[in-house]
Image (cartoon, rainbow, N blue to C red):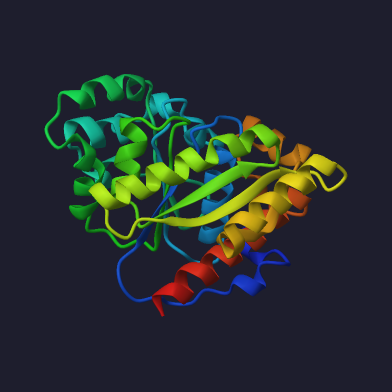
Length: 280
């Protein structure tokens, strides 16, 4: 795709920027099951929000570092990243790396993050490390999206304690449902113990295939149980979405016209309406 600003493409006008009062919102993108489109959602939702003028920070808290490489940043080249913020108390401001997407900044992951779970065990008030880092961060932003690892360990716990809400990508397959209730219980317990008011901001159905009866059955089951918590937008299975990370680009830059990119544009619209409607 040519180097065009995705906000100038047709179809994004519905997400015209509006000013919101108050501080930035922090959303953890979490699911303890891997392969559900969690990092893909973090990358492309961040890009879509940035494309309409929101100042966004993508915080890569997954030791795999796929969110970092997915926006074209070599995580091995960063001297300061999420590990240093979490373990060493480094400033988020010093860890931020700008991406090729206007308004989108990144706090990259590093390979050292894989050992952070063990190191956090010995640290006092280990659950509050990330919250403290954001409380001390003075730069202006509208949204922070935290890409959590596919586990409910201390890294994810730090993200949940620091966040205003949790966005859950859910693959449209039967086994994906099994872990959802566990995640919901975890969010409730973290809210009760560490972060009053924390809740599920929304559930987004990913890898949806309208031709597959199972996708439709899973979608119907999730919507019947969780109701309006589930976003109307469903992210389809789309080869362009799968190809984009190998090029170090969000799919909105790789192929804006594909069905996957358009789905993330619509999801961003829903997120904005839900978030900013709740604050009004």
